[in-house]
Structures are given as structure tokens and as C-alpha cells.
Image 1: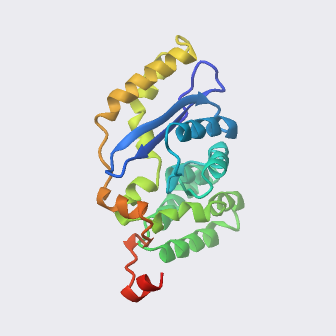
Image 2: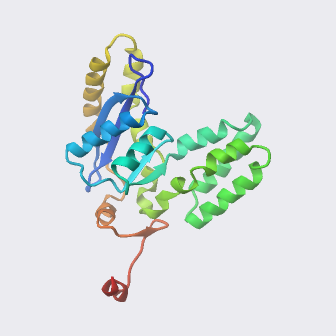
Image 3: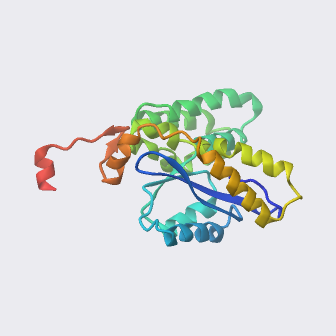
Length: 240
């Protein structure tokens, strides 16, 4: 999230996690530079020092390069899912206004597909339609092809939460409003203290994740394909 602080180069770096029971919790909040791997690295290492020794199964974020570089260094086995809301906006910004409504519907055909195979087919359709005249828009999309479709390897009940970073954007809408109104009146330290208190109060009303009963399976390493649990036969289990 990018709530600007007193220093125009500084933003809020926020991490929300989910417990095995599906409760959303604020686990990291500090100020830093969004594109800076060092800023994100310091936040992730602080989480490790506070007990998060095993990396998350999945991280969901926009294209902030600093975040992804830091995750790769701190938790190299954590998989990544790019936010479809941010990616859609980035792709549409590279198209003329006349093309944007049709392109937006075509992008929805990708992330709303029931299977990864169907999503890849919709990907190819988008590339075929817009690739000749609008190369930059297509490059923006296919650059993160795999990371945009990671959610298919997780329970279908979780897809709503995994495809976007709305869990942070919506949860911190009030916080953003308060920081904008207070812009220039608070030091970074005072602003962070205020934001933490606002977030702490908001956390009490956060809704539990859908399909929270599936989370223990993810922790145990059970595989999912197209949102459905892969059931292994007894012979396969014995061989493993």
C-alpha cells in the first residue's frame, strides 16, 4: 500500500497475513520506499525475528519490484501471485480509451476462467487480438503470465482473496483517508503510531477468509489443481 508520509519518497509498507484459522492479521507495518528491496527486506527480516521462521506458502502483491526481490532473498520457496486489479490497470493504461472496455472484458475472461488451461487459452486470445498494434500492453501482461495464474494451485474458495490485494486496499481505506487529511501535519513517527492504532481498531472487524477449513491442508502440503484437492490413491501414498 502507498499511503504517502511526510517525506514524499516514503510510503507505508504493509503486510497482512492469515492464521491457520483464517483470521486476517496485521503482521508488518513500517515506512519505507516502495520500490526499494532493502526497505522490504528489513520488514521481512523483522517478521523472521518475531517468529515467522517458515516462509508463507504464497505472497500476493502488485508489481513492486522491491517486494518480490526481498521475498526471493528471505523466503526463496514462497510462491508469488500478482494482483489482477493492478495488472489490469497497467495494461489498460497502455491502450487507447476506445480499446479499454473490450480489453477489460478480455482480461476478465482470463482470471475468471474455471481452469488454468482455459485461462491460458484466454491469454492467447488477448495476445492475438492486441499484440500487433499494442505491443507494450501485451508485453505488460505476458511478463507476469505465470505469477498471474498461481492461484489455480490453491483451493477455489481462496481465489477471491488471492487474485487481488484488495484485502489491504479496502482494509486501509480509512487509514489512507486520515493520512491524506493530516498530510504535512505529522512527522513520520507520529503518523506511523496513528496508523497502527487505526489499523489495530479496524482489524477487529476484518472478515475471516473464505474456505478457512482448507488452510490446514495447504500447510500440510496437500496439492490442488484448478482449485480442487488432488486426491492420491492408496498405492501412490504408499509409494511416496
